[in-house]
Amino acid sequence: PEIFSWIPGSTVPVLGIGAGMEAMILAEGGSLKPCREIGMIDVHVRSDHPLCRGEDHLRAYALHHDGPVPPPQYDIIAESEQCPQIVSHRTMPRFGTLFQPEVRNGWLIHRFLDLIQFII
Image (cartoon, rainbow, N blue to C red; front, side, top):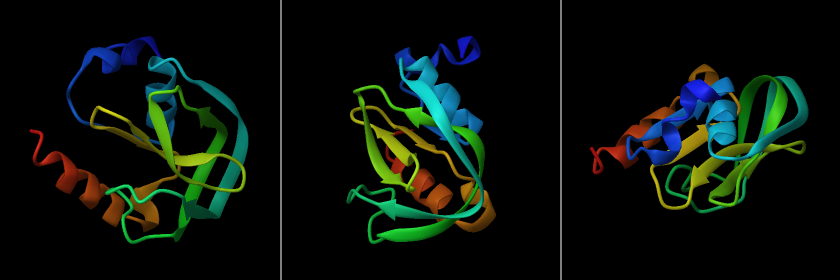
C-alpha cells in the first residue's frame, strides 16, 4: 500500500482493477476481508452510478482471495454475494473493480474513460 500513498492526495483519475483496487482501498484507509472467488461470478449493480448506468446484473471473471472493506468516502456500486465488486469515491474520480473487467466486461473500462475525459 505504501507505493500507492500518492492516491489520497491526488486528483488524477484512477481505475484500480483486482489487486489495484485492493491497494487503492488500503491507501485510502479501508481494509480487506476474506472473499475467495475464482471463475465466473454474478455481480449485482445496486447503484445508478454513471459507471454502470443501465446495468443491473453482470457476469464477471474473478480471481481473488480478499475483498475490500471500503472507507467511508467510497460507495459500493456493485457486489457479489460475498463482497463489493465495484466501488467509487464520492468526490474524486477514483473507481475500483475487484473482478477483471478486461476479460468479459471491457465496456466498463470504456465507461471509465468516457467519465474521465471531462476531467483531464
